[in-house]
Length: 165
Image: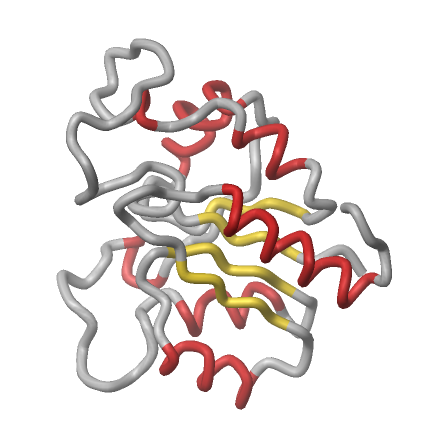
């Protein structure tokens, strides 16, 4: 079964809090879009996964990011409470996205790329998700890079038996 690829945006695809000025990949009326490397689109599609927006950008991800990245419109995770992100992690529990992503995966293998994943999230998923899952934390200062993509490729190969995805 093709793994789902849950994609966060802020701090994952678009770097935040790192070296300024950020590298820019063109111009846009949206102030953050030029930080998003358009070459990531084909790389994400080449992973052999089914990409899904897992971001508070919601449908704006398809309107703004998909065309920039050369992606088709992707499914979007609808968050509880209208998609409003809590300002901070509440207590020692998992990230506010974790439960919704496990529910959305419904036992299917999945990868979650985000800059806020912790060991609490990994433990929670291991205890409650019957299928394989890779929760990969991206360094928010730089966004998704070659090392991150290599880790995803290796994981996909390990569960599908297909090398060089």
